[in-house]
Length: 232
Image (tube, rainbow, N blue to C red; front, side, top):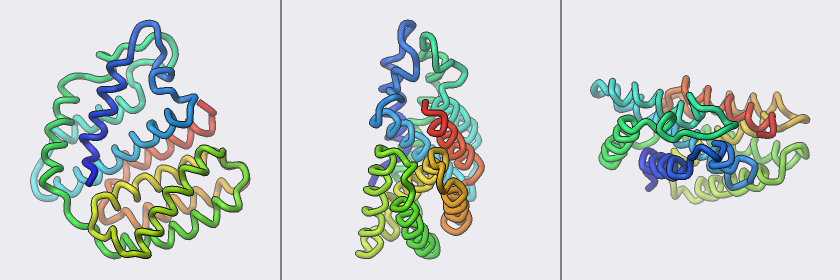
């Protein structure tokens, strides 16, 4: 099972190692390539999973340090306070104490991951069907995003049909990945923008309400939609 915090730490450390005064952050992250954009999408998916886990764990005990660091982890994804153009400063973006907190939170996640409610699984099945129908009819989505979403949706539908992912952390990660991808599709689409947005919003309402903190994750979704629409 994937540990979202540990995977995010791995990506951040890799990016930080490649930052430099003579290379732009968007070049470090290879945002002009399909693989680079997929990794940027993955980062927001991981942040969404982490936020959900934090929300669940905060019901049992205070986690003020990690909640404060979560804000910084989001800023790292957005490359704040640095800029996307010009040289890049890893120390300004990837602040060491907050990376340390991300590592210790990853350790906590190894021991605490409660099961998903059944109603979330049922809601996801409906969203998968609707997203597949939209994807098949929308010719304005780029091939890179379309291929990514087709694979994700096919994997999710197969797993749901075979009932192999209930109460599984991989299910949660896949659900977060789909939700962010729906917003990416909304950002790209010129034919069905409102339908993509409605599907993403319905997923937030019907699937994630019981296990995902919506605020930061929704902000991430809008950010991805903006990046994709702008062709960055």
